Amino acid sequence: MEKRDYKKYNNIKLAIGIAKGIVSFILILLFVTMGYSTLLVNYLSGFISNSYLLFIAFVFVTGSITAILFAPVNYYSEFYLEHKFNLSNQTIFKYLVEHLKGLILSVVIGVPVLLFFFYVLNEFGSLWWLPLAIGLFIISVVLGRIAPVIILPLFYKLTPIDSASGGDELKDRIEVLAKEAGIKVENIYKFDMSKNTKKANAAFTGLGKSKRIILGDTLLDNFTKDEIETVIAHEMGHYKKKHIIKNILIGTISSFLTLFLISFLYESTIGLFGFSSIKDIAALPVLSLWAAIIGLIQSPFGNILSRKFEYEADEYAVTATSKPLPYISTLEKLTEQNLADKDPHPLVEWFFYSHPSINNRINALKKFINESGDSTLIRELNFEGNN
Image: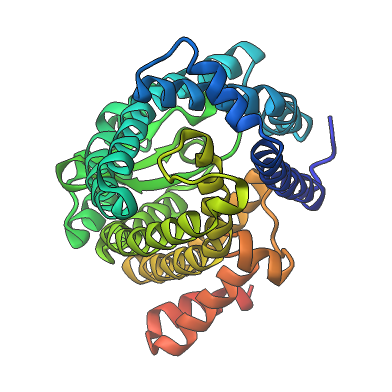
C-alpha cells in the first residue's frame, strides 16, 4: 500500500486532469481539421436519413470513441490510484456497476437535452443560444428539485439522521440549528458513502421541498458529536446564505453570456474549417472546441465564487454553534481522511479549487473570529493557544 502522501496523490490527480483536457482538445481539433468529422457524417448518413437520429448517432460514435480512449486512464485515476492510496472500498465489479448506472443516467438526461439543442439550432439559426439558455435554466431548476429524491437514491441509500446515528443528543442539537436556519429536521440524511470510499463528505442539495442536507456515514462514524454539529451548521449556512439560489441565478446569467459568445465564435470561424453552415453536424466539433476554451477561461472565476461561499458557510458554522475549535478540528480531520492538499500552490488553488485549501480556511476563520468582536468565539478560539 502506498504511503499516504497527500502531495503525491494530488499532484498525480492534477496531472491526469490537465493531460486529459489537453489530449481531448487536440483530438477534437484533429478530428475536424483532418476531415474525419465529415467522413463520419457521410458514412452515417448512408443508412440514417433523419437528421435528428443522425445527430444522436454522431454524438454516440464520437462519445464512444472518446470513452474507449480514456478508459485506461480513468481506471487508473478512479480505481487503481484510489486503492493505491488506501482511499477506496470499491471492488472492480462495484466500480463498473456505478459507472454503468452513471452512463444510463447520462443517456436518459443527455439525449433529450441534445435533441433540444439540435432543434433550436435548426429552428432559430444564429439565435439558437437564446432558447438553449432558457431551456438549460428550466432543466437546472427541475434537476434541483428531483436530484435529491430521485437521482441520488439511485446511487446511495439515504437514512434520516435521527435514526441513523448519534441518538437523541445529536438530534436535539440538529433541531436547534435547524430551527435557527429554517430547515426541517427530517430533511437531514445519512448516506452510505463507505460502500465506495473511505473519504468523508457532506453537502446541501435540492430546491424547495426537496432540499436536503446529506452526511456521509464515513463522517458520522469517525467524528465527534461537536464536530458533526459544526459540519451540519456549515451545510445549513449554505441554505441560510441562499447559495444554491445564487448559484442558479449567477449560472443562468453566465450561461446566456457564455452561449452567446460561443455562438458568435462558432459562426465566425466555421469557414476556417471548411464549413458553410452552423447547422452542419460535421461542424459541431468546432462548437465543442470553443465551448472548451470558454469553459477553461470561465472556470477559475466560478471557483472564486464557490470559495467565497465556502468561507461564508464556515463563518456561519462557528457563529451558529460557538464551537470554533471543533470546526477547525473537523476541517483538519477531513483533510487527512480525504488526503486533500493542505497547502497547494496559490495558482493551482486559484484555478482548480472550488473549495479553499485547509490552511487558507483555518486562517480565514481565525481572522474572522478575531475581527468579529464576539467574546465567546474569541475565548473559545484562544483556548487552543493556551493548551
